[in-house]
Image (cartoon, rainbow over all chains, first blue to last red; front, top):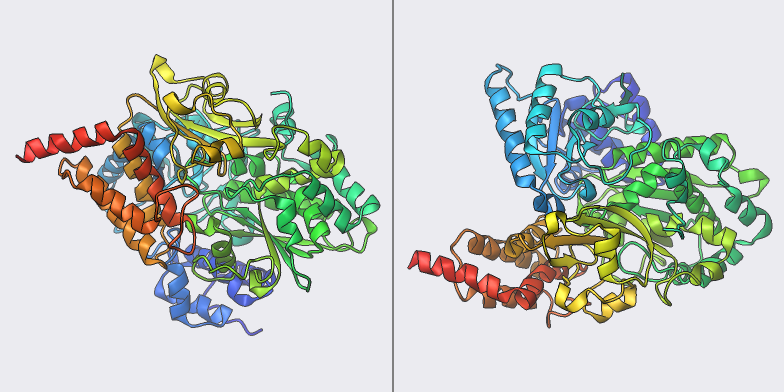
Length: 210
Length: 430
């Protein structure tokens, strides 16, 4: 095994080895490696896809074909926070379109007041994220909050812009801006997301918050 | 609810049901010990077969029978499907986040029964907390000797690997899931060969849903016969139902099937907010044909009773709509979902779902034409000839026909409303 890992960080090089070793075939590591690449490059760039291709020993075009199939591999810089508002059927029935509009307008107004090249906050509408009992459901960097109203969405986006949390924590957001939940979440979880990639230990994207 | 299997621990110990200490002091891992010490792998599989448990992922195929199809040869794999993405479903998320050791013990016992030494759990990318909780459970179980090499001194060894999806509903279809796990686009495969013969890496593979596997420890401890004795025939055991939409008490409920939809919606789900009237509901997730109060409130909640009425329990998502609902917009939302999630392999689905979405949008935008109703039904018939449920297929998987369900539902139950909406736009256009 002679992995070429470009300019990835030392920690991520170790993660690459562990991820590839977990599967009977190298190609299975494509998706986790694309998440790792998103952390390194902020999104799945052409360079990132070439590096992943070398690691799993297939062509860049084959990696591109996989990356383009999945909506969570972002092809351009989404900033530090991606706010995903569910507008599928159950959330729609509970007013999700107004929540989405409120989040979008707030994010636009925040962006127009700043001179960053790339907006810090991106707002997207997504299909069902499995929190229908707590409609409307929203995720920030894939960390969930439930029972969101337009007013709470505005407050959430402003809070992200003002406080710029290093680690996005579901329980913290739920406490500040959430409402009815799909089910009791149980005890508070201390791990959250460090960027717009699902926060999961083996991918190096989860960190302990305050 | 008195008879619960899956949610007993999380209900009794809401703050720490996910930890190994709570799991162990509430009987956890004793089913595994029993299986390893007193039962052969085949005996475990026999108990699961005797339970008559029908797969909880949507198709309702008996889990024990599926296991019986697993071909000989090694390596062989167990893949657990936690790609829960059907609009309306959120029960696998609760089971994984709140009681990950129960799921993990089910995975270990099932792997023992199937003689599998490497199991994967495919968790949708939007469920990072479920992945973290299960990963922590894996680490705790290895440390405590319930997972890894020579489990509890036996000659059975197992590794469990979590694989995160990245936002594709279609990966919940088991062969698409396997392609995704192999590092490919999540496109369903033609069957046969079935995964039990040629699955992951073309090796014999069993793909089971989270809820199915989470039931296995209880079945081993209490016997398959005891599980089969719960609830109506052919709908045995408990079922997690995700209830959402216009309800006073949405949420996940673990029920014994055989109650009526009236009881489910008005007693368990708390009825409709602000005294509004029930208009329609979807009994089994976005794919399922809709039910209406005049016809179905006294129908029983069971696999067979729902099927006899032309719909399905599916993965157990009940979506309730009250009298204020614009059913054309609701249908459009669901069709839009399937158009977005179509993998694009099969022409009837790729083109058909896109056209259904466009025509419904046109009607909603006040540009409907009278012939649009016929057009919607014609497109639907090209995706799924005969417009029946279970659907006739022109496609590799059932995603395309699922997009037809909302169309046939509104044309069957709400035709006057649809016609009125089109008539209004024709008047406006002149």
